[in-house]
Length: 268
Ligand SMILES: Cc1cc2nc3c(=O)[nH]c(=O)nc-3n(C[C@H](O)[C@H](O)[C@H](O)COP(=O)(O)OP(=O)(O)OC[C@H]3O[C@@H](n4cnc5c(N)ncnc54)[C@H](O)[C@@H]3O)c2cc1C
Image (tube, rainbow, N blue to C red; front, side, top):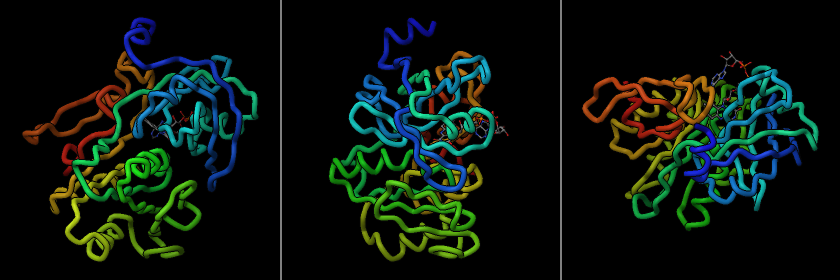
């Protein structure tokens, strides 16, 4: 099934290796790997599913958003939360990886749909925002990053420009959460423009943001996470419950129909 899928799509399963690793924050690293065919077709919002070790431990691949594309190299930003992410964060240059991608759908960046993009992220949710901002900048779309964290040590802003920050404890930037920061930004910076919000972060943040955007009639796309196995719709491990257009509950496979969804599907 995987072979057939690879033949009929742009998805590739590439033997790669670590060519660079640099710290990006507390327990967070950015890891570079050459993946020419993935880099050539990747779009912001896509993810890759990485086999982090040549042994069968851990057996399953781990999913990561594409953080950045530089020529034939892709980068992922990884937070060390367990066995697989620890192996990536502690990898050395030359370590082998198997990289399946680009997977999933992409953020909708059609410049005809909006004037200004607001990239709202929390914690490791900033991972897809660099690739997104590079794409927006290349098409001449104005954008701003609004980045939230519990405290200043949780703020991840590597590679981002035009950044405003919010911390729950007030240790850096706006004192409050990133949805409150968005509210203030809209009041002071975006008069009369057609806004689209792009977001990634912890589910409670995304839920609050989806409700906020719905109340104000703002276009909004969210990149969600779930526990995930195969990444290509075979294992059914990444089922999430959303709403359909009629407001009824509906289950989707996040790897195939996501990870990017319309914000209205995630409202309370
Ligand atoms: C589409 C997608 C994109 C992602 N992008 C990124 C990214 O760019 N950077 C990044 O650091 N992480 C990202 N993640 C989350 C990342 O895949 C998990 O943190 C990782 O798989 C955990 O592997 P582990 O072996 O280190 O943890 P494990 O040892 O397997 O688990 C450690 C803990 O993390 C929890 N966990 C495992 N997977 C997830 C998950 N998907 N979401 C939340 N909790 C989880 C487990 O329940 C457990 O409590 C993404 C997930 C998805 C589905």
